[in-house]
Image (tube, rainbow, N blue to C red; front, side, top):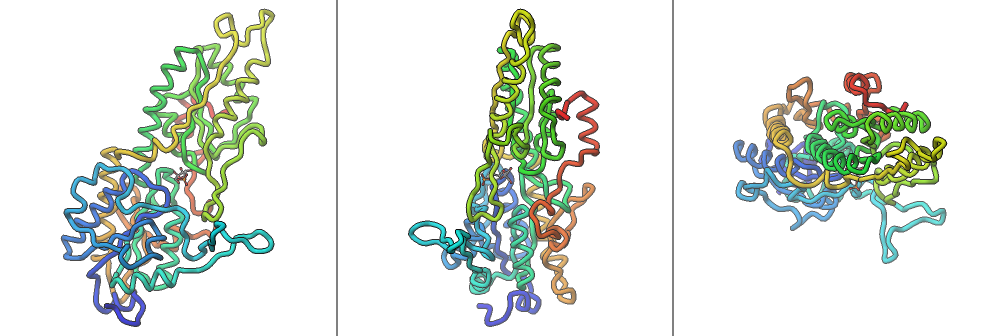
Length: 412
Ligand code: F6P
């Protein structure tokens, strides 16, 4: 048992014999492939792996919730979605909402009351003889990862999110699967849209970043894509869709969940009280579809036709790909990337371990220009605001230009 000293000091003296692993934030296809790669690579080094379930909540629970993961536990999980360790995107132990029988507790002004349980979590790691932690997560999870590292926990982060919006890495696993699912949804929706000569809106995830939407629009051959980084003009959007209907009788529009509704009162995002990133999107495409339908039907020719004698009235429909893009079997590309990331995390812990440089911990595995590397978590999470740490679509970037060149409209 590690005695009364900080984990990092113990690790610097004795090396790494046991690592902990946890998955935090929204789940993402490829998490199990990372866990598998960590366990197999650790086994190669003769290092034990302890699974910490339920994200940071598990770190707070400690004790018997921590359990050894062996090679046999990871047999056949490479193709499984979700995470065998479960996850949570609400448990920031540095700022943990207090609860009682009525739910979350508020002060007299209605503000949430928070506790800081981070040192309890660190003590639980110390009691379990964990020498270093592999923390698999997105910006929220890695912010805490950085903060545990500042408290003296040797940490290596693994970047995860279907949104592909993490700074300091060119790509995160889960993104390829999410885009593939969204493109499959476009293919299904297109045929019914064509059959009924409708404008079909397909909403995809991504929070404040439009990477999933943009990649889906290009790969799915959409007519229009709406992303948070390029504000659309409602009138221009409607005019452009009218052109599509005149030219080919239907239209496909990909909507990133983080875009604004044309009429502010027609859509409100959900707020998850007590969550570090409280806004949850989902549903804006319905409000946009209703607006477009009304606008397209509001101008008619002398026969009363909105577009022509076939398209007398325009109909718009919205489909939200939703959680179907986040769960289920990961693509081969995501399995490969997850395996590379997981194995490199252990490699970095073991090979870059250098007692003279305080172990060289507090880093995140990253892919840069096709090469695996590690980046300091201080650099990954440099901003105090969540959005400041996100990599968003570059409105002047190559993919936006490509989309415009192949005549995908941004409604701007
Ligand atoms: O960040 C990943 C993500 O899937 C976003 O694309 C989405 O907005 C959000 O998580 C949904 O979170 P939750 O699982 O809390 O609904």
